[in-house]
Length: 366
Image 1 (cartoon, rainbow, N blue to C red):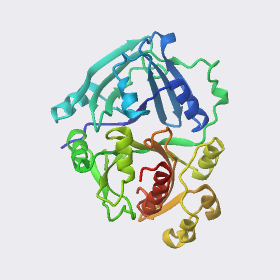
Image 2: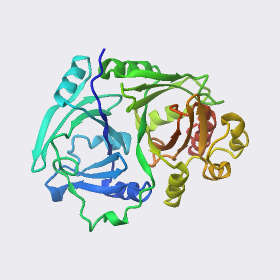
Image 3: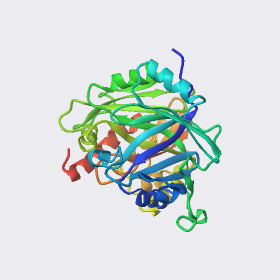
């Protein structure tokens, strides 16, 4: 079956309680530049939206302006979270019609919106939970983001005061789904979007004394878009996936992994901005060189920052995870640097999940 041609992830849209304050957080903690705004001042009556950029990453933060907003219930159910992973396609109508023909649930039909900057085309299908994939084409659009959005008022966020931390692109986006549903969603991406399965981890790879999970990674033909999908596996206690499903009230995006060319510099900057990261015990670093061999980075520096390392046949990678970014233990972020390795840090899973379990214990949700 041929791929539906997808060029890249166009943007990730978050639905949040207070977009203005969330924009302040992602700008000052994660180093994003706020580039565009939609809301009452731009004649958008039902919601406010902020567009944030860093490197090739675009985040959009959207908040409802009234309880009549069609998505307002989402906040009560899920709290802040990812509502849409938008995909850049050469032909919106063709992508949408083919996806629906293959069995995707349609959310919004193809629509071409026009303003003085050109034509912006979109159409949406449903994926796990009430997350969407919007097909986007902006080949004929020259505006800052989309119709209804205007460049941000420099009075509010002046570009000269932005302090990027070196985040360059989206590496992968992970979804959590209910027990027994992982294969169904792997099949969805295979059948509907022509993705292939890259790798799978089962509970033998990913288990601690308390929690176990299964994970499969799907990617599109070019390898540019990667979506790991997790489900909980039977275990003694509630796994982190169960905890997520409980507090998000269903399946959804668990984390977004962001690539950097220099993880030490990026993490140092983010820590200085008050971003909280998960910590593994110091003993993790005692055996690190035996496990991964020689690396370019200074081990003491990695230990100081809490950065994890894993190696595969093609090289190694460095990664670290933030703590959840809202009060519910749901969405978090990964910062990753790849030195040849294309893997997902399987060798770190055990240490990482034990670190997550220590946090769960503090929350009383283990």
